[in-house]
Length: 101
Image (cartoon, rainbow, N blue to C red):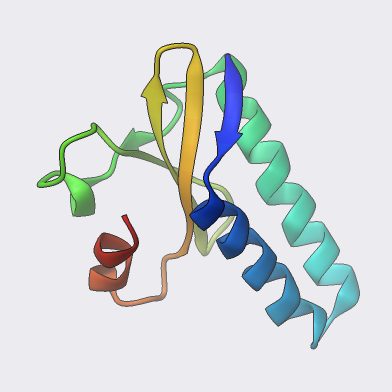
């Protein structure tokens, strides 16, 4: 399967990287690479993530994979594509995730 990052997900990833880059370049790079690597796992294990309960009311069968202790990759399976819609910091207000999707 192919991994497709939406514009929103790319912006989320970049914002997370830029935020941490200001404080710790090593951690920022490690976190960025970790998020990319977790996304790559979905190519061979598309159902690794659970159905995302916060998005049950939205059509699309959104799933999420906890990529590290604080960040989820929110995605859907669309044919042969894994579409990553958002990279969400789990410490944020859950309503914010709903508004992004």
